[in-house]
Image (cartoon, rainbow, N blue to C red; front, side, top):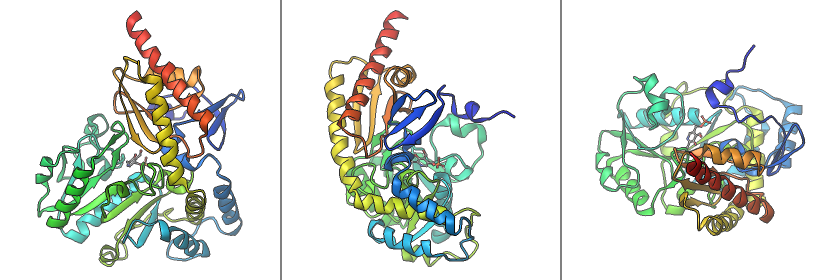
Length: 390
Ligand SMILES: Cc1ncc(COP(=O)(O)O)c(C=O)c1O
């Protein structure tokens, strides 16, 4: 029996046997500062004690239950999520993955507006199932599987002019407040405000894909709060489950009331273990002031990176918000990531074609930040020395 994972995901040539807090450990006992976190999942730290406690306790009660039955953890989860929900979005549906949340949001948009057209942005990433892939920009991911969902279009990100394409035939616009996979590219405030105004004017839903940015990562609970806008639909995953696979779709009453039995369903969606994980994650977020910590640490880390890389000819830009940071370099960053992993014991991940993406847990301390900045410096240095010798 062979695993397909390396073929589809690449192979980092590293066997990880344990994760604890902001660190993971290999089979030899080497410790790595984890700024990869499974593309942002372990934002609350590996094996966060509260998340482990809640899942464990839930396992002792009931592990699986179809959502047509309720169970006490549902009420507890709703109570914990209530103060964190995006403003006015009082309804939540749990699903299993980011892409599934996107699928549901696109279905909801068509159902409640009666329109077909879906608009997304160049460089966007929303997932790899058919609907989500239709609104994912990278041709390498999308084109081999076309035709996908019809009437899906891409317009320029951060361009107010491009918003003219949004009209009375548009069911929804889906947007990341910071494009993650596309290269850690933050939206600008004016663009997001205009986007909100235009979608409202024509009656199109504004779907905020906060799968990577949400739940404290950027220094606010939701990244759209940086822009002071109110979306119609917000999607969460990754950090949302504190490490457990789960996604969430937040909707207002007026949309929820238009949905009917059978409009969506998912065997594992909202299973008791997922609800326990979300409940614990929500508690941690509030009790530990996670967004505030991400804001402060993110600023420190960006400052350190700017200091360390100020003289580097390989670096084009350092950007991001909170603990979602991109170091954009002039060359493909693969060799830099390898050096960071092997020599400096820091894990990070690529974004776009030229960006080193850092998505560390909120738990990182000053020493970890030093280690990350140092590793990036060394990794980036390799890119230049490889160029000069090749
Ligand atoms: C913004 C965004 N949307 C959607 C997805 C897809 O999520 P999943 O891989 O859980 O399907 C991702 C995953 O990286 C993402 O970053």
